Length: 496
Image 1 (tube, rainbow, N blue to C red):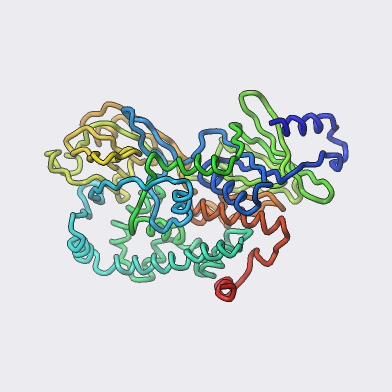
Image 2: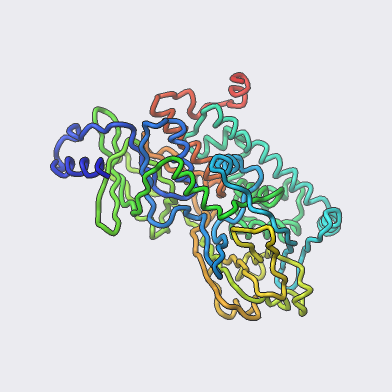
């Protein structure tokens, strides 16, 4: 960090009242990314992809690379404790895996069921046609109406990949949503999943039994959440899912290594605006074990959640006129517990554990103390690997809104060897924020996580990363025709 030391020495010699025009000349294009999760790792990759080798990227991370992509070790095996799988339509993630030479993890099939507190309200079988018949028998054509609704949303959302391939970017979340689905998508952020599904003929019973269980599994929230985020979650419950052999977090570390980003393990405390020769320059202050320091950048990307109720997020913005507003809103806490033990199958109505057939259990609103229970596989799966039988000790992943009490663990498990937990501020608490935030906080200061206030997933963060990189590039070179354009479907067709 010789460059940092030289800059710091030069700036320390100046009093605060000195003209900022005396700031030293900065060679190259200096960029700071705050956060090394999938958003920060992906935006570092995309920035280098667009700006080329002249861009120098510092990535600040106070924890471990990967963020909410993480693993926990149990009995010398590693298991996903964060985002566990991705949808087949996650195109950016698919590209990352190919680019990095990673492989999809071998799928180990297991049956699913939805538990309603006293009994299973829906059970999956090994026969596809029988599963369809059971859905029709219990819920009529509600599942078909749901599928049509989700497919319509996804068909429009997939337009973002065409827009990004042509270099178009958006300065705010509302502009991005409007370009994809016009007022329909924007309105879906203001109306609930339940309200939207009832309008297309989905029954309340299907919403209570099935839709709510999927939303609890993905967001830990109910069908009262906004329809757009709900539709993206329900899309993830359909189609094929995949994971990365060796752990999903390998995508983050791989992208940073490929980009040759300089990872700085520190907590960013403030971003201060300066200007030199009429151009914005941002001072990023940070603290680590050594002490406090700062550096200057042309571009800054915030790739970590900013919200008032996150006590760990103490980042402040100094010198901006008008000031950058507090990013109000709450996050949904989620606790992931990896329990190595014997399942109490009798709690689910199976006194003989050998007869318990399910590897994945979703829940309706009852019981309220846990959302999902999964018999999980390690991140490295050999050709000879087999899933543990229900009467054997296995590693179960329990997702809950709060840490589990010992009595609750005893409810789910006959006995257990170990319990390890990870607590996440996993997703925004949808409905807690009155407006959609913007990606552009200032000329070259961006908030990547703005998009998760519309919907939250690993692929959504990758989409946001591509958008921010394009936004920075188009603003830097003043290519305003590529920002916030209307009628993009027509423009893209004429460009082909």
